[in-house]
Length: 254
Image (cartoon, rainbow, N blue to C red):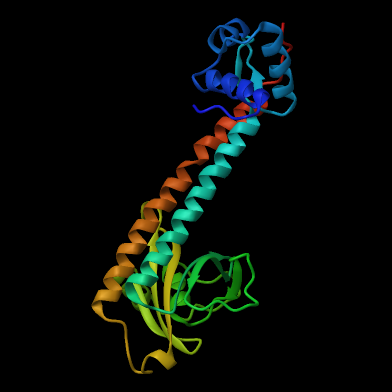
């Protein structure tokens, strides 16, 4: 590891490198880092105050809960970046105007990521936007997997829903453009999200439809996104580690 220009950070980094390998006693940290015992003791106490280190029931040092949260945040940031890159790739490959990934929350659709050819100056930096579920292609995919909540009428019959689930996609007219909605499946074939490709009518005829190449590219992208979502769900195991770290109370350093 290349050292920084800040000495105290280099010492903390050396201690963390030891903790990466597993629980370690104070004497082991001193031995492996080459730092003086009083220095290690002082830094570890400060790291405990910041949640960067803890001690287990055997008095060994372990990574603190804050490091686990940081690891989860880094994993989330990487997953979000890869997702945006995936949307940009499918838009560049197909030449559509916009690509969105939406999830369902009760009887609304939430846009969790998007890639637009032209962005409005009023576009919110937060991509999460809600829209009511209606009869557009994206809503039809959501409805194909499960109907609206109690008090709402399901607008698609069972046969149509079954056909959509089997095919995995729907295309049609919505918001002044041609929309292709593709199911992104989660575990056990459940619907995890909907990938939508949109092209405004000024760039295509109203009676037009997406060709097989675009549909195939969108289906392949949905499969890749599905794998990413499943991997993201697997990070719940990390949350279990965080909970365990919280249950282990801090101990004094001798």
